[in-house]
Length: 99
Image 1: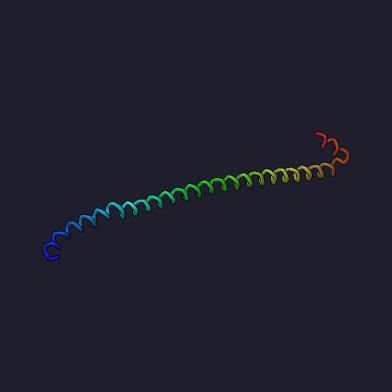
Image 2: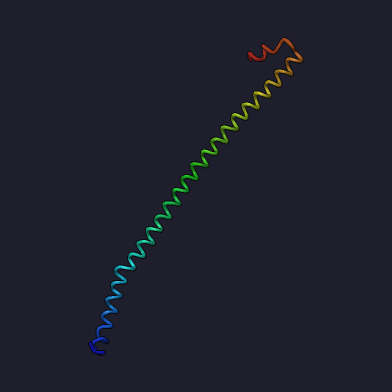
């Protein structure tokens, strides 16, 4: 193969190489990037959904705890009130409990 034949083949090889790169390699790279992007979107939405559920659970637990705490406090206040009331009016505790 002489120099002139080689110089004639080089542009053809360049075109074929460019076609191969743009037809095979570039789509693979972009497909991997798109798959990576989709993976990140799925992970983000999953973390967001888990965060929302955990937050709702924590808020529900806090609400229930406050309700129980409020009932406990009200029972303690009522018990203290009944005790003080029975000290001042010894025979009236039963009448107050009926109300």
